[in-house]
Length: 284
Ligand SMILES: [Zn+2]
View 1 (cartoon, rainbow, N blue to C red):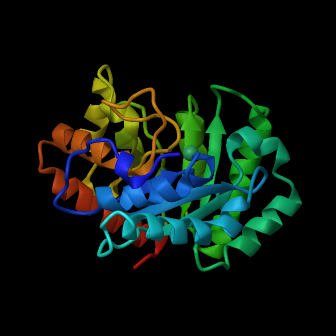
View 2 (view 1 turned 180 degrees about the horizontal axis):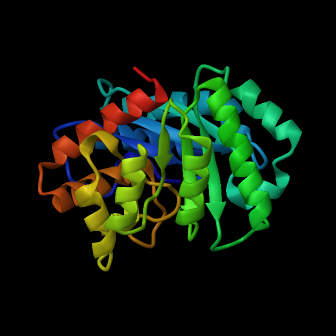
């Protein structure tokens, strides 16, 4: 179990930022990770609940926050605020085959809960093809329609499916509450198409990887007003922690890489990402 004292060394930012996409329920020690995030200057975490997989976040989050508070208080960080944690609900494209009317009903119901801020992650994954592509397209369309109806933003997962994904988004229209392309790993030309369509582009650990020049070029052209930073933890830990378990605190490394790509101070990226996340998720 990780504890706040085990937080690896990270750059200290002069401005707080967000982890716009995490899977706290997949971490070994969500409470320790929340405490570490507080120490790293993460003011907002959006955590994903896949309604066809595991809803324990709904019952366990309050306990994680209480335990994180105790960890901070017990380690001399009494004055440090916990991050705000909001919840994103939906059916991952891997689970599109399980996107039943009951899950759609559960999405609508969950949208009324105060901590639920967006629908996701929904979209298309033609790399793994865990569900048939036509089934993925149908589940994507249906979840987009519910987002339109309930005025919720969407967090979109696209893998090897950016042309199809953008076509569906343009055909149905972007939900006015917002549309985030999460864990963006494509090039600048692809980023430009999503930016032009009005999407927010969210960068994760891969923007820090040594051979990821194309992703850094995508970060360079993404306007600050349409940019987020995230971990997608426990996956895709940024350099220099690539290969180990990721956690929300590591978002600061992604913010540093995005800022370097843009040639601006890290604090500008950190602050813009937090402001964008708070607006999209309607927090604070
Ligand atoms: Zn994810």
